[in-house]
Length: 483
Image 1 (tube, helix red, strand yellow):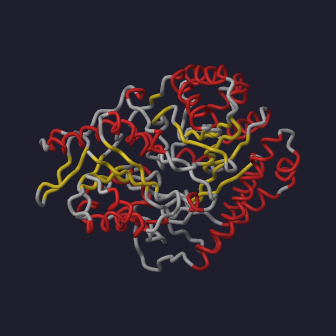
Image 2 (cartoon, rainbow, N blue to C red):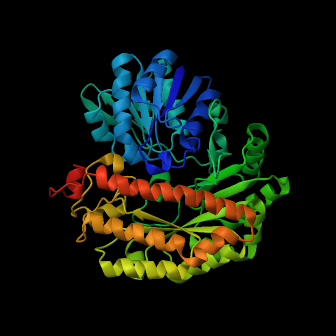
Image 3 (cartoon, rainbow, N blue to C red):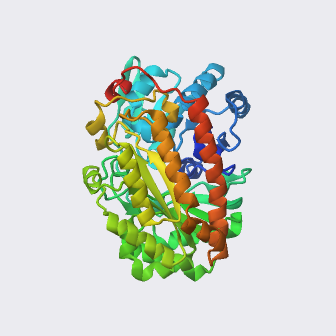
């Protein structure tokens, strides 16, 4: 079948501010198996050039596909845009079937199909095998009830088939890297880059995160095969930067160390960045030199909060002392630490923001990123706050960079404190000293790149707040917003 995969344009700051783009790994991951199954597949990355809806429709008509597939990593905030695009496509190509997938559709399939007659099918969960089964079924006009892991309409009824089994061996499905053709994906200062996964899932029960629920089980790729694939990307595609999408790649130390050693043995000039739990860094202090030798230059650490009680309530399974130790270990090995700190857990006061700043200064990370808690309906945290009022009714802004939950402090006070903390953390003497005089030239360059983006984001967020954000004055509770 003739298939067009569309990566929709996204309004998030992360998509717009860096003037750089990474390839959509999730879409490439379903593209590869479809190509291998004999289908004619093409990628239209509308996020790459922030393509207008009319242009997307024009390109889709030109390609004239049997099926259009859409998804986005920013699943919640991207869904309204997907709804708009698919409606326009269906109006011009009524016989083309539209399939969507991702985290948000997996859990909100009922209201999506009720409100969007142009969307024909929803893939729930991991898509590689499900999409092959669905497309083959549509090609042979077989019984849709035989395809596990999908939702569709049967006349006026919405049918959800049984959950598809979790993929046991991630090596069974190839990523369609060839679909990147025509796109110059870059990161880390205009260097050719890709996103990749060593593992899927997370064994930790953090209540605000849906990773363990969506992926079901933590699994990892074959260490040697992943190293081989990275070597191929470097030599055939000129890739210099690898951005790991994993929540927790180092969960199983033995396999992770095997991967690091396999990659080191290839002696490639690469830059690796990713996310890692503080306790894994502390655990791996004895092999951190392998991280550096493999090419790691930065790790994002989910600090989340300074209050041990809140960390316990959200089931973070960490500690403030371990957070600080992890940052010190990374610094010893010349690896940048980026601490993410989440605003909105609990009823924060001015004193809480002051204490947060004190704790962050005590941690002394190289970089800081403040986010807002986003209470997704499918997370356990939703049940804790479902009766709270919200201030943001525009789903497109449920992107971790906008305040969602209402607090006693006014929204202008919240953003003022957040922006002040960011300025203080990034302009304190220790941070400036590392920025300009770090002993590793590559690290100085990386921190300078991030600082330039940070300045643009800081200004953009203020302008958005002052002239574009509309905080509702109505009393709308979280459970009411999601019906």
